[in-house]
Structure formats: structure tokens, C-alpha cells
Length: 251
Ligand SMILES: [Mg+2]
Image (tube, rainbow, N blue to C red; front, side):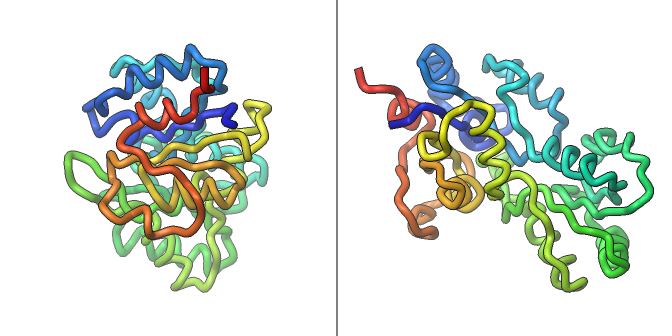
């Protein structure tokens, strides 16, 4: 039985500026159902405000409190510990961390795109060697944009972990804490929540490890055979339309 539905954004609802066929209607159906609906993303190239604008611009209706982003989780984590991050992040979200003026440093790595360079990674490495904690936004291997696969932050986080001999704290998916933050907001037990995503590791494996149900969609970054890459029981469907139909209570 499913009482809460968690939808990944990119690759599930849209692909860049294109709506995935059936996604608008699927979200509408979910909104009109008794399911608690949440949107959950590791995307770190847009601020929360820009993400909401993007979603609404495409025609998706949602309340701000239904959207959970890994970037917000990173802000919260840093704030709670009074840390000032050295930011290896995309220029679009740099402003989200300007107001952190605490003294103790931390290293924050998200999808920095062109911001990844030897100099910036080496600075991160040196700070970690000096004891700064390493925080990673997601641990994603790649994402899809404009029809091609692009390296995500995961490998860059790994590089600094390897060189400095440290382990990053991962905020966002696949962290169980992030999934639980979202299910807690619904009041539904994790086992009665269904996570729908196109990333078999970040979305599906992460959700299963956190005690949620999971559903892999064959859209976005999905590649043939992905369903065989992680253990555990989960649904595999063609698109979010089918995933929502799966979650809706039987009449
Ligand atoms: Mg995705």
C-alpha cells in the first residue's frame, strides 16, 4: 500500500526544457488523489526559486513546501554546524552560500560544471587535509542534458576523498537521511512511500536502503539493463504516468 509519492524531477518529469510525455497529467492525477506528493531532487545547477519557476513554466503545479532539494539540505547541514563552505558549486547557486560567514571552513562539492579545475579541486584537497569536513551534494555518477550524458559531482567528490583520505558526508540522494526528511514531512512511514526516479543508484537503490518502495522509470538517463545493476525488489515502468497509476489506490 502506498500513501506517499516522491517524484524525482529531471528525467522523470522533464528532460531539460522538454516535458516527458504524460508527466503533466500524471502529476495532476497524483495531486487529485489522497497520496501525499513530494518532489525530490539532487539538481545543483539551479536555485530552489529557479527550479520552482522552471517547473511552473512547464505547467507543473506544486507548493514550495512540496519541493526538497539537496542544495537546501547542504545549507541546513552547514548552518547547523556553523561552517563556512569553500564552494565547488555551479555559479548559478553560489549566491545560496554567500551568507555563511562563520569562521570554520568546510568543503562543499556539487555539480560545478566548468568550475571543476585542478586549482579548485586542489584547494578542496588542501582544506580537507587541514581538517575541513567534506560535504557532497549527491553522489551521482552522471546526468543527462540536451540529449547527452554528462559527468555529475560523484566522481569529483570521490577524487578529493581519495587524495585526502577522507569520507564525504553526502547530502541529498542516496542518503537515507534525505529520504526520511521528505517522508517525515508527509507523516507517512518510509515503507508506505514510493520513490520514482530514473537513476537506479541515487533514486532506486538509495530509496530501498532507506526503507522506501522504489520505481525505476525508463526515461531520462535510464539505460537498458539498469534494472539489473542493483539488488532488491522494485518496479520498473515505461514512464512516470505508469508509476503514478501504480501508486494510486485501487478503486
Ligand atoms: Mg533524475
